[in-house]
Every structure is written in structure tokens, then in C-alpha cells.
Image (cartoon, rainbow, N blue to C red; front, side, top):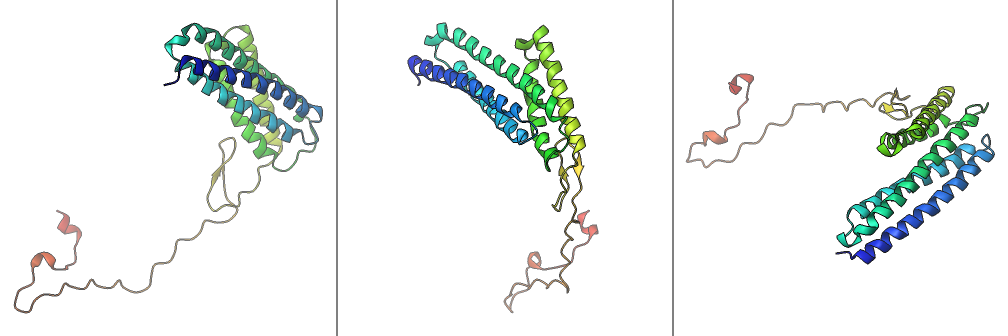
Length: 229
């Protein structure tokens, strides 16, 4: 069993780590927006990965608070409030910085090869974070504004993906693209192996003593569909 003091220190360390990650994400977002047209997408992905790491740790922190000993009853409320504030600050940071980045990235004339797939990965991540805005924590005018901004980011992402054709699918089977479309492979599917020539060997009957008649249960005989009745 974890004591109240141990759980308190554990959650406190997690909250401090979340605060540090929030500051790091802000720095990564600034770096991504400095030169969007030159390697900006790679820097944005570093930012978005750190954001996802933040939300993963936030989920673990919430689990620790939910399983806190009863002796921590007076601390659970303040720690939960601190966690919710950090969570909300990260959601706001992610949405606003993503909107600022893709407002510029969507106007870049020459996009690198693979942009369709790269942005597709970020599009799916955006949709997952968009679900946070359905929480009652984000009700009200500010929450509505964040939802509109998130939807705008999704529109910009789709516009970028529409400008860049997907990379060819070199596999043997169809695959699912970032937006759910089925991609047909360039190579045809592998043909089924041909059947083995010749008739299958008849099973060898079990040896029977010469002085006894064969057991009818051990006879090998051909079956037909009529035998199933």
C-alpha cells in the first residue's frame, strides 16, 4: 500500500513535471513558427509529440489522484484543480499555436514530398485532442472559441493534404490513408499458389491380422453429401 505522504510526493512531482513540459511546448511552438517554410513541419511535429506526452502524463496523474488514500482528502481537491488548470493551459496553447502555424504553412508554395502523410498523422492527433473540448471544463464562451479554432485548424490541414498527392502504395494489399480513404497498391496482389499436381495419396489401411475380419469402424471409405443426412 502507498502511504499518503508517498502519494502526495508522487503527484507533486508529476505536477511539476507537467509544468516544465508546458514551458517546453511553448518554446517548441515558437521555434516551429519562426521559419515555417524551411523545416517548419518537422519542428511542429516535435511540438505536437511533446503535447501528446503531456496529456499522457496528465492522464496518469489523474489516475494517481483517483487512487489516493483517504488521508489525502484535503489535498485531492487542490491538486485536482492544479491539474485541470495545467490541462486547460496546454489545450489552449496547442490550439492557438497550431492555428498560427497552419495559417502560414497552408500558404507555403512548395511543400515537401510526404506532406500528405505527415499532416495526416497530425490531423488524427488534432481530432483526439478535439475530444477534450467536449468536457464540461470547456463550456462557455472560451470553450466555444477553442472549438471554432480547432475546426479551423482541421480545415487548414485538409487543405494542405489536398494540395499534396499521397505517396504511392508499394504494398501488395490496399491500405487506409490518413483521412480514411482506401489506397490501391501499385503492385498487383500476389497470386495464390497453384494446386499440387497429381492425386493425393490414398491413406494406407491399418494392418489387420489374417485370422480376423477388419473392424468396420476402421474402414476407409469415400464420403458424399448424402452421408450428412
